[in-house]
Length: 521
Image 1 (cartoon, rainbow, N blue to C red):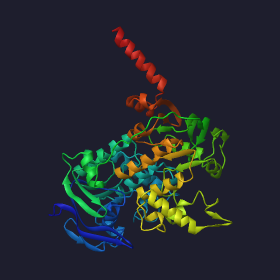
Image 2: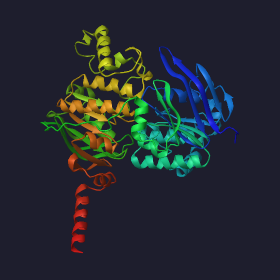
Image 3: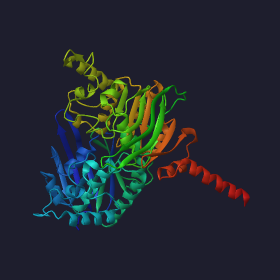
């Protein structure tokens, strides 16, 4: 153990990109055996700062010390050699390889023979140690987003990191999994590891962190402050520089005609296993139907069958027209907007500009289309209007999508989807991994769609979000709808029981029998 009380010392760090000052003379320290939360809005410079610590970026100026030793990393390999591991928000995995193969990538062992069964067992042992379950033999493309995140965490732990940088590690986990991860983090810290915890979920930060550093527009607004006594509101104000509304106002309104109707819909997942089992749902004009459930219970497949991205059995009616098993262009022309779960690889083209990403649904039609070509003068001007209207922070509309923060990328996707004036919006985890300011903005946009008469199917693993936005909530478990309840009658305990596999009618029968038993006694 070094004499330095700090596992990490970053002093006066400046990181510049063309047209952007990402980190402006930032100081950050991580003590031995602590969890230090790093907070800030999307684009505040948190991930950039930690990418420098992980060896992915080289600071323009400033110094980094690890356990008191001055370091100058030129690659992630240098950082790993010093015991630093980073769990990235956007996954660094090879889709066609197995979980174990991904964990072993880049390591010296095994050298000549893979002996995968032997290493599968080592991965299982690591899972048992840290409570992160995922099939070691599964291909990455077969896994849910939550399972892929677990692979990233396991990959870092397998390398024996003593300093862990966790960039939004809970953004894709279910509530029960978050509790397990928090216990894992506490266990690791008790064993002498040090953790930088980047999160937008303020309740998690107050629950698990020892200290907090806050960045705003690349500058530090609070450095290494003790978390004791701080509230969610205090942290939010430090992040965005103003009071944040934690619950958006939803106006009462009567829903109109049925826009989306699913009847006895069945579908398989990427492994060929049943993912949807006889789903029946309706969504009406000016209504938000929330879909609650633990990750991996058919939510992704439900969105994909509606938007033409997955084959199914049964009927899917949009405004009375059956679009089941039709290509995505049919749902697009039926007025369906889709905000997918994976905003980076499905919702956008990372290497194309903001302009290109905003015309992906409109390039076939006038005024974007100009004969057989695209009118890029119009497209760029339209993109500039959307950039202003949706407050997308980027140097210009020619900025590539991959250079945007999560919140700004989500605004680009929403700007594109809303600009088609949809009749139906399918939004899957629209606020996942976003900061409180961005969440407030995205939720306001979704409610505005409801008020304009759009039918909204909202898939979220955040019960608080569903209770805040939805008119009705349907719970899905292993591809089956356990029950649908009006928001005003929603009981959190009932929702939780349905999320673990109990049908609503069974829950209410059991409750009625229990109440009758108490009256008799």
